[in-house]
Amino acid sequence: MILFGGMVACAAAPRSDGPAAPAASAPAPEPRRAYDTARGGRLFDKWTAETKRTGAEPARMKDLFGWDLRGQKGMYGPEHMNKKNALPVDLLSWEGDVAAVAARLARGGDGVPAYAPALTPPELENVAALIVAMRDGELPRADQVLTLTSPAAKDYALATGGDAARGKALFAERCANCHGADGTKFLLDDGAYSLGSHARQKAYEDWFKILNGQPGSAMERQVKGASAAEMRKELLDLLTALCDRTAFPKGAATAADVPDADPRCGAALR
Image (cartoon, rainbow, N blue to C red; front, side, top):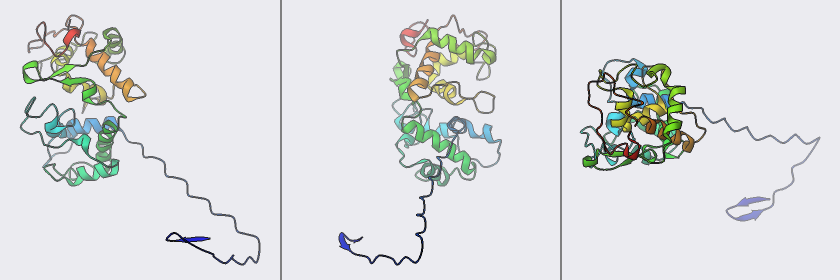
């Protein structure tokens, strides 16, 4: 019996001159591609450090879209840090699968530069996989770790609920070998910050680096949770621990540390 536009027609039974041929089996579905979202995050952060390419290169993605991937709708927008390079493009609103998002990054348009000359297709797919994973809730987003406030209140505040004791244990396990037990083994931004004083003032950046790693270094993803919720809790615990100015002092850093009652750490500031 065959359907034609909702009508039923009868087909003559095929003649059989021998044993019936075995039914063809359906092709096995292709396995889902495995993407490295942490590598995608490092490429988003500073892809030139990852690829070592030179010449005419488009801008760093983080400069255009911010550490929260939301462009002018997020931390870098006019209501907050007002970064002049931020685009009116929210990457977390882009539709489509990894291939579609990668193709959009490759060709550019609507103010977004074309990244195809700078990044290979697999590299673009890793960046796109990061975007899709954050969009679809497979990785934590900035707004689950930090809350946007106002310029007068330093633009953001660390979310509540972090466990400083667990964060210190995670730091000792995963970070102290490189950064030192108190985060002062080496300084950041040309000596301006220790790890602690940086996190107390720039957690909008540090959450991303803890999640994805530091471009051009041995640091890779430092959270190991099996779900976005578990990774988000590790991020929050680590950042809460780093709000302790005694356990993680500024050391010999040249920039001032946060004062008492600085709003960014909230009640976690020690």
